[in-house]
Length: 262
Image (cartoon, rainbow, N blue to C red; front, side, top):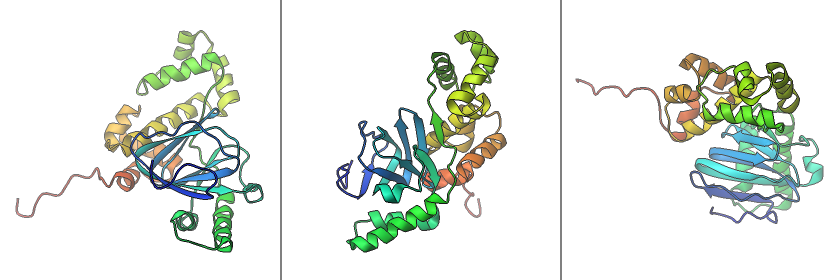
C-alpha cells in the first residue's frame, strides 16, 4: 500500500493497492466513503461482503470493523465524514451509485491539492448531496448466520455453474426447501435465486477485473448463455459486462480487425 498510511487522522486519503492486496481488519471512529477510482474493491464486514467497481462507492459507518481487498491494480480514495455530515447516509454499510459530479468532487478532495477548510467542506457537501439522493445498490451480499444456510452458501460457492435447486441443496444439508426459503428471506432479504444471482455477479466482477473474457466469465459463474449473463449483470451493475471489462482492464472482447489487404 502506498501514497498514504491508513490512518483516520487524515480526513482524506488515497492509496494504490496492488492486485489481491488486502488490508488487515480495522475500524474507524468516523464513518467514511470508499471509492475505487480504478480497479475493483471488495469490502468485508461481519454482515457480509460489499463490492464496488468505479461506478459505485461504499459507505462504512463509524465503528464498523471491515477489511478491503483489491482486484486488479486499484486506486482507493477515502473520505471521512463527521457525524453531522454523515447523517443523511444509511446507518449500515451500503453500496451507492456515484454520479459524475460526486466522482469528480471525490477525486478533487483526495487528489493532494492543498485546499482551505471551507473549500474541502464544500466538496464534501457536494458528495453527500449526490449520494444521499442515490438509491442503495444490490451489490451487498449478506453472510448467512444459520448453520444450514451457511452450508448451502458454501456448496453453491464451491460450484457456481451447477444448476442445483434449493430442494437438492436442502437434502444435502438436512433442511427442507421451505425452511431454507424462509431462512434466505429472513437473513438476506432475498430469495435463493436472487442471492445466487448476486453471488455470481460478485464473482463475475472479480474475474473480469482479472482479465477473463465476458463469455468465459459467464460460463464460469453459471450462466448457460452470454445473453442471460449480460442481462443479469447490467441490471445489478448498471453497465454491460463488456463495457465494465474494458473500463477496468482496457481489454475488449471484440476480435481484432485483420490488416487491410490480408
